[in-house]
Amino acid sequence: MVHKFKIESAEVEFRRPAISRLRSVTSQVVACMSPNLLLLDLGMAISFSTIAVPDLLNASEGLSLDERQASWFGNVAFLAQPIGALLSGPMVDYCGRKKANFIANLPHVCAWLLMFFCWNLPTLFLANILLGFGTGVMEAPINSYVGEVSEPTIRGALCTLSQLFTSIGVFVMYFLGTVVDWRRAALICLVAPVLSMLLILLVPDTPVWLLVHRREKEALKSLCYLRGWTTPENVREEFDDLVVYSKTLQQCVICQQTNDKMPTDCEHDKMNIIKRLILKFRYVMLCKETLRPLLLVLLYFTFLVMSGLVPTRPNMVNVCGALGMAHDGKNIVLMVGILTLVTSIVTIGFIKIFGKRKLALFAMLGAAISCAALSAYAKKNVPDSVFSYDTDTFPDTKSYVPLVLFYAITIFNGFGVPWVLLGEVFPFRSRATAQGIAAALNYVVTFIATKTFIDLETSTHLWGTYAVYAAFSFLGTIYLYFFLPETEGKSLQEIESYYNGKLKTFADDPVINLFKRFKR
Image 1: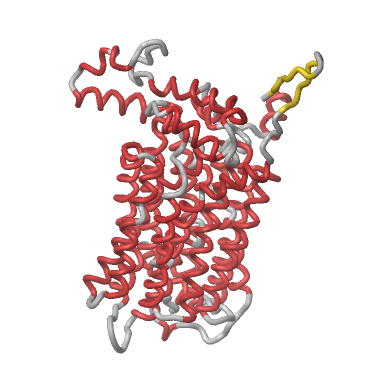
Image 2: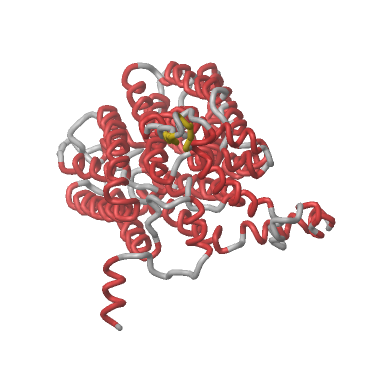
């Protein structure tokens, strides 16, 4: 903003100093703290069964689970998660990003309390189902909010920082498993959702959501907050761009009428409501700018879940013993939490240096090689009589080889970035719903992966189980090489335009481009 004054007939200009970069980034980090605490809670929820199952399996006193009950307890939360995820999209669109983040905490508040006070197996399972449902409800509010409040240059880092809190939650839960019993761990976990509910009251809703709902003054105030608690003059250019973008979103999605007409002038608003909803679903959810990234994210989730770490999580302590790892199972689980946390931190820098595409390919290929190596080791050194749900069959000999390979799987799994992509690849109109659908399928795949681990092990033993995970990882590497574009540094509008354009069979890659030039 330039101001002019006349001093002794001379015109003097001065420019209002721009807001510092540090202050701008800090304001966005502060705004994301409530979703981050949600993800901290999510990380503790998805890893709770890992510390609870060993204590509950054939316990001599108190609540006790047999092998099949333990398998179901470790997986029933994943079965409830898709229901919550599917509901999270409509909730975000109706309530707004901020209110949805507040509401998303409520199921976990109830779940942790019920888990602490549970008095029989039905209440134990109900508490775990509530944890799964609440985890699903969190998905769309978190990803929509973080993706829409952040600038393109730091969106990847902020989304990765958010996922870091999931890793912190996993680590905290594994640490609690070494110092307190599962009931006290549940009570301690209650702190996260309560703090998240308090923090969300202090931050604004996203500017683009406010603009779409014709709340321009609130949107401008929100943008000023998110860009370093600055003045409207310093965000005018970005705000004007958002206004133009929001105008297109206010158009009738069916006929895409011109900007100078009000939505009430559209004839589609007068048609039968059921028919109008069907048409809107067709043009919002079945359009190429939604379906293309949705297919990408769904397949990425599938390959990452089946890359070796997630299916073993509910029974990880026993799997470590069955493979003859050198250290105690609970200590290994704690180390897995530490490695997950460290890789999440490193990923923030790696995304800025290498981009998301190269990091995703490196992670998937590394997981494939590690799973294949662990399968080969188990085939040669672990007897077929070993069964991870029966501690009496565990081998007496211990080795560091499976331990190192298992840690490698953990590290490569931590470098995966599907949750980062989830916050940026979908267009605004379908963003919340598509995120909910993608998260729901992820949880369905997670449930199938964890529930079938016992069946895979029964049929193919441990070596065959990890051979299957290696095959999925190799297929995932091939798919991502051809279809994962680079989104780092791109605005949400640019990414939407990319998927709305001509279909690119191959992602932009130097090897592919070199091959095309050679053919010419």
